[in-house]
Each structure stands twice: as structure tokens, then as C-alpha cells.
Image (cartoon, rainbow, N blue to C red; front, side, top):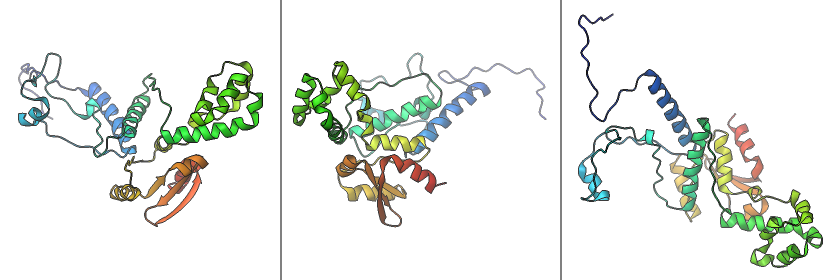
Length: 266
């Protein structure tokens, strides 16, 4: 046991820094832990950058005219992960933006924050095409019961007008559309990945036009399975499940994928 024999002299923290006491540190560690576990399910790995960097590094992106010194209200020292800095290297496709948004949404939900993320989208091209086919098949036996306007839109389905039937204000149309398939019922890779991650599975999003390159990268990540979802699978509501270790593959209904992996890894 060590005891001070003299009264401690007050020492202020270096300007732009702070001490994290037990309560604040515990709160920060809780947030970081949730962020780490969420990111790992998305297949992201942590990177630790040096606490200090050469000024030349910032000159490359900021130029010589930018003010890179600390500003009022900012700490001089901070942890990158505490800033929720997430980057995907190797692709700039729109699906990556969606992946990062979904990850951030999972983090705030896990923290119990009352937040709703509103994004306006009609889905990807493949999902819209699959949904249009599903909706057309549903409406075909009912087309003569639709209102005059909706029947006209149905006739123009080749131009995509069939989706406008969903906006009908006619009471009869609304009744007929109560059991109509929804856009979210059309399977997409994004929704499937989200469902698997919610179940605690690690899912890497690999976006390359060549299947061979996708599978090669999946192997480098150490993935044991690849889920293939193309136009044929979207139309039928199935996925192709490829065992990267056994070099075998099978098809199964998309709605059974999560249960399949839950049972496989139980």
C-alpha cells in the first residue's frame, strides 16, 4: 500500500487533452464494444493509426492553405474509432454506401438510441424488375376488377406503369391490394445480408462484376460460404449457396437462409 506523505500538487491536463475517469471511460468502452462487434459482423477489420503523423500526410489532401492546427472546442488528442470512422477500401459502388448506413443504424439501435433512419429508395434494378414481375403475376387474375385508371396502368405495364397501381386512391383497388406483395418481399442481397447480421453472422459484402474475382476475394477473407444472388434467383426467390471448402453448391429458399446457418453453426 502506497500512501502520499505530502499534499498532492494540482496539475492541469495538457491543453486539448482530458482525463477519462471510471464512469466516462466505462461509457466510452461500452460504445466502442458495440461498434466493434457490429463492424465485425459486417466483415470490417480495425486499423490503428499512429497518434502523430507527419504534416506532409495532411498536405497531400488539404493543401498548404488549409488550417490543420487544433481549433477552439476540439481536442488535440482523440481516438479514431470514437469518431465512428468507417471506410471500405477497394470499391466505390452504391451498395457500399448502403452497407455503411446499415452498419451505423445497427450501432445506434444496439445503443438503445431513439433514432429512425429515413431513406427514399425504389431498390436496386434487379429488385425492381423482380418485384414488377411478382406484382404483375398477383394482379393478372384481378385485372378486370381494378378501377378504370388502374386497368389502364396495367395495360402499360411494359413501361413500368404497373407500380403506379399501388398509388391508387380507389377504395376497390385498395381492398384488392391489401394482400399484394410488397417491394421488400422481393429478395435482395442487401436485405439478406442484414438478416444474417442481425442473427449474429459475419457477412462480407463483395462487389465485383466478375464472379471468379468475387469468390477469390471471399476465399482471401476466410469465408466458408458464398451466397450468390443473380437475376434467376431474384425471380424465383431462391439463393445459390456455395460451400467454398467443399466446392459444392445448393439452392434453397431465401427465407430459409438464416435458419440454415443458425442450424449449421449451432
